[in-house]
Amino acid sequence: MSTVVVLGANSFSGQDFVDLLLDDPAYNVVGVSRSPERSGLFLKYRTRKDLSKYRYHALDMNRDMGQILSLLDEVRPDAVVNFAAQSEVAPSWDHPEHWFQTNTVALSFLVNHLRKQSYLKRYVHISSPEAYGTCVGTVTEDAPLNPSTPYAASKAAADQLLKTYAKQFGFPLLTVRATNVYGARQQLFKIIPRSAIYLKLGRPIELHGGGRAVKSYIHIRDVSRGEKAVLERGRVGELYHLSPDRGVAVRDVVQTICDRLGKRFEDGVRTVAERPGQDAAYVIDSTKARTELGWKPTVTLDEGLTDVVDWVNAHWAAIQAQPLEYRHAA
Image (cartoon, rainbow, N blue to C red; front, top):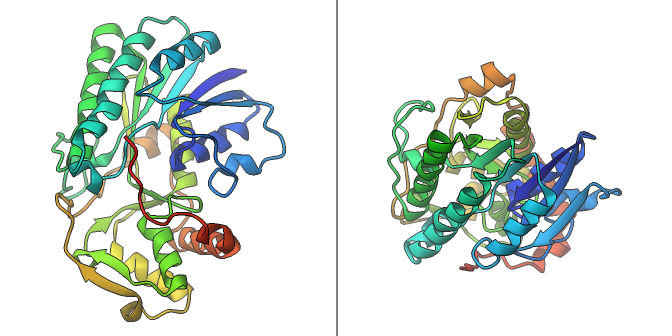
C-alpha cells in the first residue's frame, strides 16, 4: 500500500483528490492544510463512513514548515501532491509578497528538503495555466510563460524553481496545469457557486467586463482523475495539461445557471469594470494527457452546473450561514 501526502488537503481541489484516493484500496493518505479541518459541506471525503486510511494535520506552509518536514520524514511517503497555494488572482495585486511567500519561498524550503530524502518516488505539483498569460489559439505544454498578475508570476516562479531541482538533482517532479476548475463544495465567492447563491438571494451578480472573458471550465472530479493518472502513470519530469474540449464565455455560464433557477439573465447581472491583468482566454491543449495517460473529461458543463445548483439547493441553510466574500489570510 502506498502512502501519499496531500498538501493543501483542505482546499477545493485538494479535498476532492483526497476523496478520490480514498476510493482506491492501494492508498493511505495524509492530509496537510493550514486551517482546521472543515465539515462535509466543503470536504467530500468527510461524508465517508470509513476514514481509517486518512490522517489530517493542520499545519501552515509559512509558519510550521519545520513540523511539516518532520511529519514527512516520519511518514516517509511514496509521493507528495502539492495543492497548497495562495490562489486568488485579484487580491494578489494588494499583497504580492504573500503570494510569493507561500507559492515560491515556502516551496523552496519544501523542495530543498525533499530532494535529499530517499523515500520520495514522485512529487506532483499543481501549477496553473495563468502562468501562460492570455492564451492565443490553443496552448501546448511547451509554450513560454508570460504571467499577467502577481499570482500568476508567483506560480511561474515556483514552476521554474522546481525545474531547476529536477534538472540538477533528478527530483521526481511531475507538473499539472488544469483550467478553470468548478463543482459542488467550491469556495462560495467563485463565480459559479456565487451566481447560484446570489440569484437565490436576489442579489446582482457582478460580471467583470460583461463576462466576455473565455474560460475553460472543467469539473473537479475530471481534474482529480487526471491528477491521479499523472501520479500513477505520468513520466517523471513532464508537464501535463488537463482541459475540456472547448472554452466558454463567463456570461454564457451564468446564463445557464439563471436558466436552471428560473431567473432572467438581464434581471440577475450587472456589468462592472474588468479586473487588472484579466487574461482574455484560457484554452490549453490536453492531447498529451489524453494520449499518454488515457484520460479525458467525462462530466459535461451542463451536468456539472446542475451538480452545483443541486448542492446549493440541498445545503441552502448551511450555505446562508457562511461568509460569501473572499477573506484574505497571509
